[in-house]
Image (tube, rainbow, N blue to C red; front, side, top):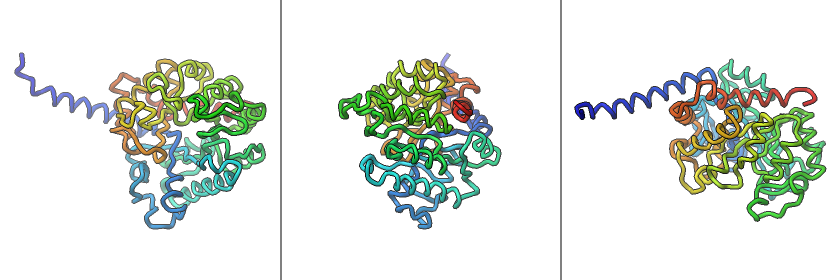
Length: 358
């Protein structure tokens, strides 16, 4: 009965190759849209936004999770580039520094037109898919970037902002951040202040995605109840799998399901395993949990590449997305569910947000 024992390793290898091949087949038609990548911050930090510096060449860029060959290998077809300025710029130069980072995204797309297509709509994403380019969108990470001004909010929209993260890891005068739930920040707005409610309504009117990554649970619930359109969590995971307050608890996941919203899973080790070490399988556990509680329509990817110091084993950079898709297929995710997580769910939410009078 043991005469064929030596075959089992070969069977395992062939099975692994099958799921990887299937992942690539699916991703050729339905590339991944990632909700959050901090490469623009790295370009500031490493090169002071001097994109002409030969070391900043995105075809050869080293020391980052992201460059053009890695994006191609990972079948990344859509990317929300994070426009981030730290919390210590609040009430100082946040608006100027936000504009500078938006400028970096625009310049990056102009410098590499064969790779990036700057877009501002769901239709633009589909066009980029057809052209085999990376649809490049701007997500502004932190409500302090609008300096409590609806005029600034509207101006950022005109310059291409297509999601706004209501807070980063600090309160704004109108919304509470996640550190309120850890006791490291004092609540100010009990979720959303009256002005915060006006911000949500204006984002709805403009057709900008509302991003609830980094906000407190009270802010999550207030926004989900107020918004007339679905919302996203651009880079957050499941609290029941890792009890970090940056993650989404199950009662909120149920609201996500009710509102047809979207959670794009973050890959930061501390939000995946609640330790400094994590692996690809543990990321898949978060995806499984969100699918179980909120439904397959609620699942997406928001890796946070180039924005975190530690990423899981097996997901070392943006080239590794096919390995994660192979793991989901191994866990009996259907092709339709995988395509939803890759792109269809985000496109559905974006199209709903774009509807007039949403």
